[in-house]
Structure formats: C-alpha cells, structure tokens
Length: 186
Image (cartoon, rainbow, N blue to C red):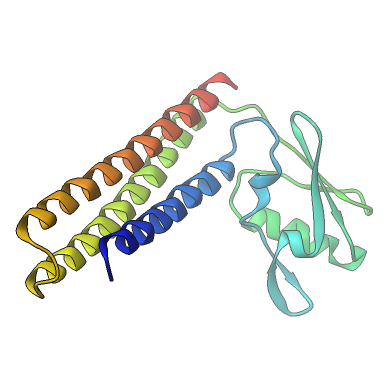
C-alpha cells in the first residue's frame, strides 16, 4: 500500500466519522421540528424491531409539530410505544389515523443538557479520528520498517496525517459551535 492509498483511506474513514456526527446532531432536539429527530426510533412491527421510517412517513406540518403517517394502521400503537420508549422527551398523540408529536419549548436546563450531549458526541468523534490517525501512523511506521520509505518520507507523511487530523477536528468543533448556537436560539 502506498501513501496516497493510505491518505484516501484516512479521508474516507474521517469523512464517515464527520457524517456520523452530523447524524447524531440531527437527532438532537432543539425545539424546532426535524424529521431526523425520530431516526433512532425502533418499532415492533410483525414481530421484529425495525426503524420507524420502514413502517411510516415522518413529516413536519408546522415548526413545533411532527406527524407520523403509518402505512399499516394496525401498527399505530406500536409506533406510539416506540416513540415513547426512545426517551426523546416526546409525548405522541394517536388520533387513529396518524400520530402527532408536539414539540414543547426547551427549558434552560434542557438546553444545557443538550449542549453537553452535543459535546459528548463531538468528543466521541474526535476519539474516532484520533484512532484512525493512530492506525494510519502505524501503517506508515511499518512501511518505514519494511524499507519501503525513507525516514524523511516517514516524517513528511506523519506531518501530513497530523494536518488532516487537525482539519477534521477543526471541522467537528465548528459543527459543535453551530449546534450549540442552534440549541441556545430556540
């Protein structure tokens, strides 16, 4: 494996970490309705646990309301139960046709809690990127030990890997800042 392949591997893995962080942030309730809020909800449908989006459609009819249209009306109670068990702090209302979920305004205490959760998600992503860096650095060290590259090349590659790591962490930090501002504004 040459260094360009290692770089591409690192970029792909780091990109996945950043996308995962964005998905985590989408699931954080900020007071504004977002269909991503229910992505983590699992529903007991036909004897198996499936994601909510496999049994119905989530929409945002207004700023502080989510609506779930279930394709099989027999699953309404299961969907309602799945939303309550997801511990999102939501209170679904089943009207026999669809499920409406009003989003209550966030208290200051809840905003602080959400900011901490966002920080935790960001730190987990940073750790993932550092683990990727360590893995790639180990491969560079192995290339050096196997005589495939010189010591100068090893140093240059390590510097480049560190720059990529710093850029990824900087992007994650800016995503966190944006999410914190969003949490405080609502």
